[in-house]
Image 1 (cartoon, rainbow, N blue to C red):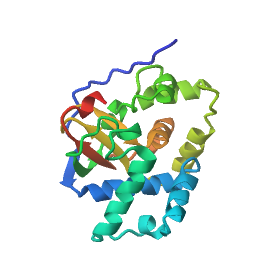
Image 2: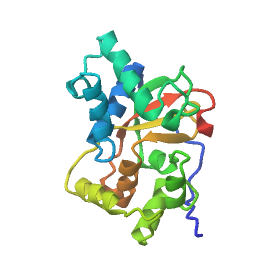
Image 3: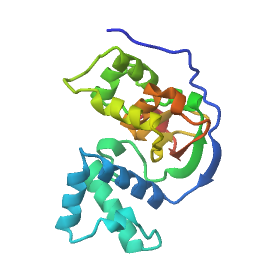
Image 4: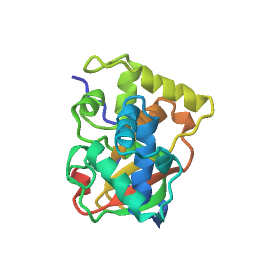
Length: 213
């Protein structure tokens, strides 16, 4: 197995322009992306239909509505393990501090995928999107999953499309960051690196131990 390791330092420069946001903003951003995903859209819609709720509560949320906030958290918990120490949110504690920030290309090059078999294999063990993009360019596919979705989003970037924020987590402002949501999008950025803006908006959560996720 070939492992591509670029000369990036794990001691990241601090992300720029951090400002604190309520956790509800992260939750609704995550759910919006699930609704936009062909893989997960029907699951979210089925939960909403089961509970007699309208998708507008995700598409056009009122973050001052405590009942809706709790329900969105419930959906993300059922679907992705949020607040349950399960699935994507395994080892994510309840006291994460959430921020909006801006990341440079160098910052993004150091972000590691979540520790899932597919992403680890696609990146050649490194869990870096830069390595996965290089392997995709070489035509490498893993677990019989095609790479068409990555190329589709890379072409969309080159055509002028913009993507919603990635969601990242880490122990603190200077430590390595791990990708919680947005794996296909981050990979597409490194298939079209010329399309990465100087500062890319992201959502990032900090809590002790999250650099080990």
